[in-house]
Image 1 (cartoon, rainbow, N blue to C red):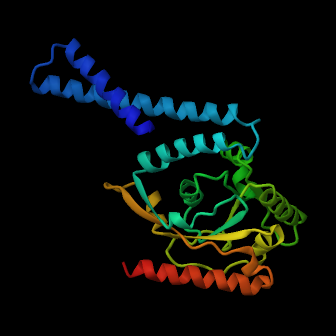
Image 2: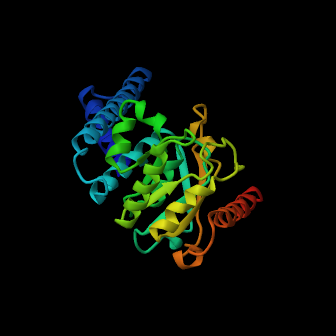
Image 3: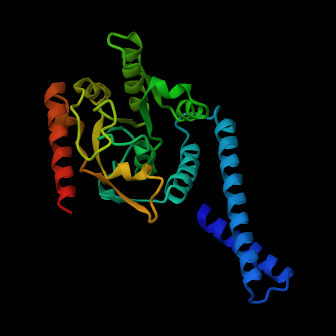
Length: 272
């Protein structure tokens, strides 16, 4: 929507400029018009980014699960990380999206942009994430994470804050805000997965929530700044695993179950 608006405004203003300079087909006039079009688009991009910063600060006091706020975040998210980053996310399995918000998303983790593209796939929900505490030291990022209900997690062994984070995640899911988790606990930067931290599955079990498995493929291409064409990345949503299917599993068994499902899907992608 923002991209279409930008294209229309840029085209109209460029035509107005061409009329004002009594445009004729000469190299210098063509250059002027193209330069005008470029400057208008750069100006528009700057305005959108400034509007985004203002939006982050102005909506901080709204409820963390406010759906309108999450929808607007997704508009900016799509503009910045699809259009400006030149990425085309291909979402498979939309029919498997949950019918309500009582679920936890578990996904493999390739790049720092993963949560942004997963959020596009789950745009109908106020999805938040369990995030590493190191992210909260960055300007604007900490505001976005706190405002949208993301949960700070310490990765230090034996840290009480980690237990508090798990309890908070369980509470948020029970109260209707789904949570996204990367059970590897770190990025792989490839289409292969590391071992899962089985304790992360306690959140779904203790919250009495369903599990929505998301498999990411080729996400490392999103950060390639030298790409010419749009990078195609894949987000596949697997059939929902109901709470009744997992409530009696121990976390190690459940972790292995989800891990194997993701591995099977990644192997399928590699055959494409």
